[in-house]
Image 1: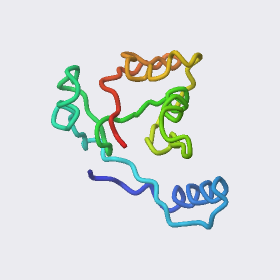
Image 2 (image 1 turned 90 degrees about the vertical axis):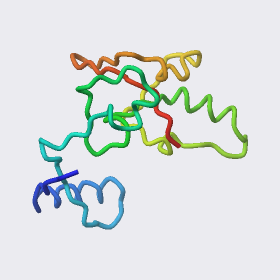
Image 3 (image 1 turned 180 degrees about the horizontal axis):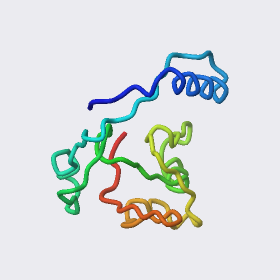
Length: 133
């Protein structure tokens, strides 16, 4: 994808923020933004094989299947209960963009069945479960 560097000032802010958050030495990270005309239509990606609801206008930028990935801590706890008791997986292994807490354990894996996610006035249509990692 064609990207535009956001400049030295943005990069300096990013590197300062990351070094404060991680307590690590500064690195040379850059902020980039995707060119407005750069879009990858999801009907042309792997998504078409796993989801019947992909619309011709659905698009993404710089992502493998979809722009956002949703996961719940509740699902992760249940998964860890069912695997080897001597180890546990971190939810970070699944690289979600949005992590939420389901109110009850019986709602574990509810993210696989959500059709619309509403955060305030923002509505997101969920097109498929994430199957990575």
